[in-house]
Image (cartoon, rainbow, N blue to C red; front, side):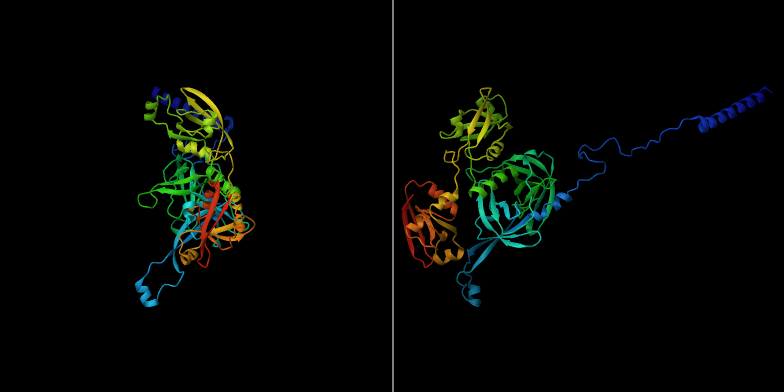
Length: 477
C-alpha cells in the first residue's frame, strides 16, 4: 500500500515539473539573440600569407598590366659566309656582299609612350640590326641610344606613339619572400608570365667582366630562361622593380635561380643615357672588401657589419674627406651597407659632384664624413659624349657589314653628316670611315669619345673612303 502511494506521489511530482518547464519555456524565458557561428577556424598555416580564409594569390591584374609593355627584341649580326663547295658546285659562287645573319632573341621593357625601351646590353651588343615586336604584333626597327656594360643595361628607341609603359616601382622596399612576376619571351614564347618570391637581395654572382661592374642583383625563384633577358620583374601591383638578366644553371636552362638588376640602378642608367649619351659613373675612390670572420680576426675588428676599406685613391673623394685605410663603412646616406654589392648599389645612384654622407667605424668609434663624388678621372665634371664629338662637327654610325667586307676592314665608324668643325677644316668628306684615332681602333661613337678625352695635343685620324682610297688627317684639339 505504501509503495503504491510513493509511486503515485513521484508521478505527480514529475508531471508538475514537466508542466513548469513547458510554461517557463513558452511564456517566461526571455528572448535570446541569434548568434551566427563563424565557420572560419581560429588557426591557419604559418606558411600562408595573411589573407582571408580560402583566399588565393591573384596575379591577374599585375600580369595583364605588364605584358603589353614587355616587348620581344630580335637582333641580327651579319658574318661572312664560309665557302661551301657543294653550294658553289650546284649554284655558283656566293653573291658579293651576301652574309648569313646570326639571330639573337631577348626581351625589353617600354619606359615611355614615345618608344624608349630598356633591355640588357648582352641582348643587343654587337648587333647590326635590332627589331622590336610588340605584344599586339606590331614590328619596329629600333635604334641604339646607348649602353652600359658595367651594369649590363642598354637603351633603344622605336618610333611609336601612345605605347603602353611600365611605371617604376621601388626595389628598396622589396622584402624577402615577397611575390614577384617575371615577364618576357623565353625560347621565343612571347608574353610569358611566371611567378616566384624574392629569394635574396644585393647578390653578386661575378657575371659582369668589367673593372667597374656593378652587381647587386635581386635573386628570385621565378622561372627565367634564355630569351627572358631584358624582360620585366614586377611586383604584385604591376610596377617595374627589376630587369631580368641571368640564371644560375649547369644546363643552360632554368634550375631554380634567376637574377634581376634592381630598378634603382635601372632608373639612373636610363636617365644618364638619355641626358648625356653615357652613364655618369660616380666613385668614392676606395677599394673595398666584405667583412668576414677571417678579416675580423686579422684586423682585430669589433663586429661583422659593414664594408672594409683596404685602399684609398690619392685623387679620390674619400681621401679628400678624411677616410682612411682600415675604416669600415657602415652606411651611405643613413642606409646600412653590409656587403660590397650593397655599397656599390647605393653609390651607383649618384653622379659626379653629388654629395653623400658616409658613416664609418674607426678603432671602435663612429665617424661621419661628407663626400663630393668624383668621376673616373678624379674630377667632379659631368662628361657628355656629344660635347666631345661635336668638336669634330660630324655625326656617325658604325660601319655596316657590307662596307667592312667591301673595303676589307675589320672595324670603323662612318661619317653620315658634316658641319663646321675640326673634320671639315682639314678636308674630311662625308662617307669617310674612321678606322683608328691615334693608332687606336674605332668601332663606335663611344670609342671616339673615349680616345679624344685622353688627348692633350695632336689627333691623327686614319680611315678609308667608299672607293677604297685610304688616307689620314691630322689636327690639334
